[in-house]
Image (cartoon, rainbow, N blue to C red; front, side):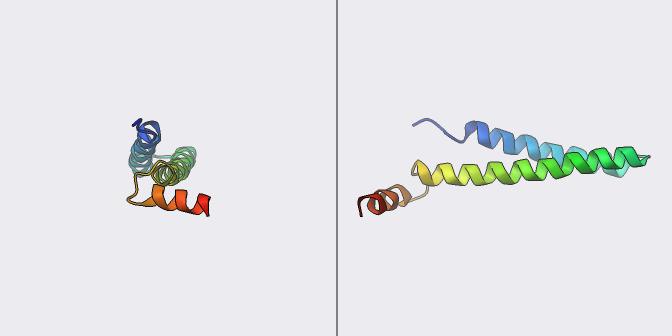
Length: 79
């Protein structure tokens, strides 16, 4: 079965890296524009990570990677 989360999980990993870089950059910056840049990057990274993690969970349910969920969904559809 194709891993539907491969790219989604990769994006979540990139977002985690962005968070780390943003935190380091923020700690080392010397002017307000730099603070703004790293704050923006960190905010975007958190949003991306949250969305990617949600999408990954939805794929797990949709494609039956969570134990019993595919059967549960099929039973709900058939009534």
